[in-house]
Image (cartoon, rainbow over all chains, first blue to last red; front, side, top):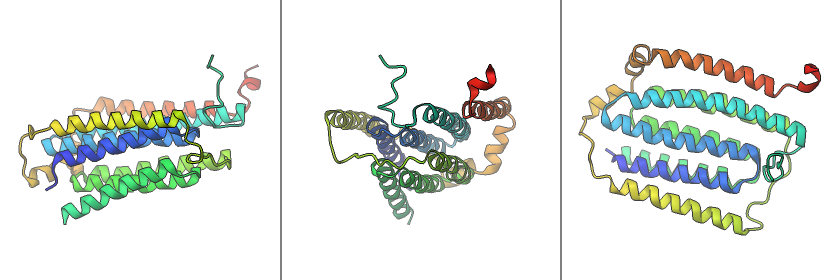
Length: 100
Length: 172
């Protein structure tokens, strides 16, 4: 059987790849997909802990995280569409309405 | 066999995640994310969480990624951004920052020394079944579960309002 630390290591690696994407990419949709990547990386460690502790509560939490991720994707993409309508760009370095 | 499957899924997940972050085309990124979600449900299967593996494919690879692809095609962003062409100070700083975060996370994980109680394979399989999750979800977590319905409805209504055309004209 694979040890818990391997799952946590892979989860940390995937989370960090998501962080790298959020920090370096400029396309708003790709940044958004990287946030989804980070969410699912955390889900892996939640499921791993839940399974190795014999406790179902971690999996329930993952279920709710999935629901919130769906709601977040829905609203976030609507915001991206609204921004794109106003600015004709989805490049987050060019959207500076709230920047001084 | 289990170790082989885990190594395969792990390399697949890390590879698709890197390809998603590094690919220039947005549609390619989205399709790599679909593959990544499939590999994550592979992780759930090795952890005996069958219900979540199915839900992961249905919700993420099915619903959310279709939404992403629709938005990419509606917006029709054909300008491919250059990621590798010009490596500037910001990107080097971002790389260093992520490496520091990775080092911290791996340091914490490396400190883990079997503090969890031992469970047999049978008990682990019993945790992830649909019966176990449904039993808990519809008794202890019934109220949050119902609240999820309100959350999703509010999200859909909000998304429709935000993405509506000519909101200002209709208000006046």
